[in-house]
Amino acid sequence: MNIVLLIAAIPIGYIAAKLIKLLIIIFKTFKSFPNIPQPNPLYTFPVLDQFSPDGIKRMLKAHISPEGNLLHPITHYGPHFDGKPTIFVADAEQFGELFKVEKFPKLDWVYDSFSIVLGNGLVLSNGELWKRQRRNLTPLFHFKSLTKMPPIMNNRVLEFVNEMNATNQKLVHPTHEFSRLTLRIVIDCVFGGSEYLDANVLSEHWETINKALNAYFLCSMLLSSKVNNSLPLPFNITIKKTMQKIIHLVKVAIEKKRVELQQDGERTGDLLESLLLIRDEQTGEPIPESLIVDEALTFLFAGHDTTSSVLSWAMTFISRDHTIAKKIREEVANVAGDRPIEYSDIKDLHYCNMVIRETLRMRPPVHTLDRRSIYDCEISGQKIPANTYVYPLLIAAHYDNRFWNDPWKFHPERFSEKEGLARNPYAFVPFSANTRNCIGQKFAILEGTLVLASVISKFDVLPADPKSTTDDDKWVIFGTMKPVDFQCSFVPISA
Ligand code: HEM
Picture: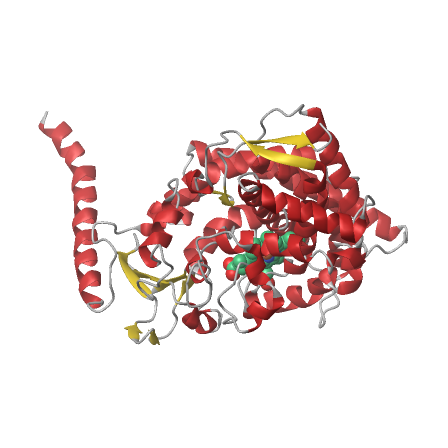
């Protein structure tokens, strides 16, 4: 009996010792920032709360008042699970400094966790590797490449329109429908077409992964991603098995492209081709196959999940305010009439473009960045020691009334050129900014504008509950921030 008690006491004692150590760290860390406000002393781990429904909304409201006043430029949320202090920075005036990767590199534990999905592709790589890959892959989104994309996008939009017609006005989840559409578009425009990758199969795999990702992140946060990765937990197994299937499909696509290149086929300038043709400047060697796979995974995921989120959020606004759809239709009729949208139309679709930007302002799919201070520094007049976890709260800048009038209101016209000129450059940062900004942002805006213009010209979008308002929507992290519970019907305009 005594031996049993002794054996049981060992893990209990271990956990108790860990808890006591954590309490001491929490106590010490709180004392180390006496001048930085803490929205709620009991609310120690906001990074965790982000994953609960509406956690992001709560975090935003802790920093920005209903009138749009910045309540706290910087807040202290106590230590992370590994004992490192954690601060959130909501003041856009500070972002310019925080976006300097040489001072505030990407936060290792978060990006280590992401590597299960993105490998060491462009989002996660650093130093010389990142520089070389960024230089090599930037031409994919040059003006010349973008001009070729609208006809390809239009084919996929037509398919989407047919699918929505076939729903017979039944309720659908736009997050699900747009995810398939944006995945098809990225495969066609960036990967050279569906003969390489099947969007329907991949879309199902991504959905499985998205469902398991939050549990995976929470566990990595508590235990570190290294420990988490070694545990046979159900969500770990699901992610690993599904990633194996995706990686297999990506490898087959790479092989097909390699054979085509060897047969001296016509150059297409797409992602896989560019990756296969990259040569090391010193050795002349091609890049390793594993890096080609990682970049492909990165562009597949980052290139569709974000744009799908924006289009889904746009539906939440449009379905509750019919004047938005009316203005979109009038603009499309004036610019393109009944024909498909062309590249030269995009610059004239001002209102559609502003609806996309206003949606990105109010519901940025990436609402916060994760960074770490590598030197002792000062932020908003507060001394911050090296190795503090620093989270620039991008979404807070988007609701700050120093830059936006009536910021809680959906008002696309605020993006008219005249108003935008005087704005702080960091007041609107859905794509981040400076060297590590989004490589695909022009593509995303082009795609968002074209899809919105085409879909809203064909359908009225009606919410499941006509009495609901956009305040009722849950802001949920599912890959990126999405209205996963929101349902609507696409009613053909002629019906
Ligand atoms: C509305 C759509 C999009 C949003 C809101 C968005 C947002 C962002 C943000 C905030 C970052 C910085 C992440 C960080 O610092 O951790 C980023 C980076 C990146 N995005 Fe996007 N993105 C979008 C669309 C796209 C598309 C369409 C592609 C590719 C086809 C793409 C590919 C990437 C890549 C590769 C990076 C890493 C860039 C680097 O570090 O050099 N994104 N994106």
